[in-house]
Image 1 (tube, helix red, strand yellow):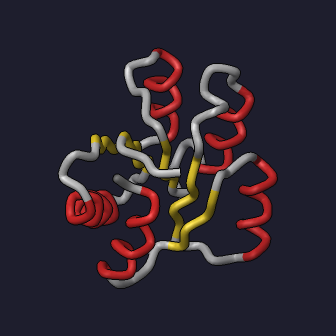
Image 2 (image 1 turned 60 degrees about the vertical axis):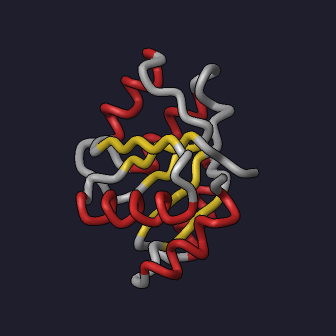
Length: 126
């Protein structure tokens, strides 16, 4: 699957900027939006204010974790078909398995290198 309308849910501003730079390097026509909070994202998705083709989701966030968000979005009939790709610093196999069980489309461990991030995102973005 290749996407052109992306939502990143991540509370880390540095990660937001790096992700956006990588997306823009791959394609200038991609629609990119980010939200700092899983709660806010759930509200905006439910209201239709935001309607991405794919969600990149950090797991470690305050108030509502990425896992909680994933569980809730996959129980929502209108939102459950949106692919969710976990985008986390975690590389724990148990965490990966749990998120897949909750309905994650894929799991990407945040690379420490910008070029690696671009390479990871290239097959997913047009």
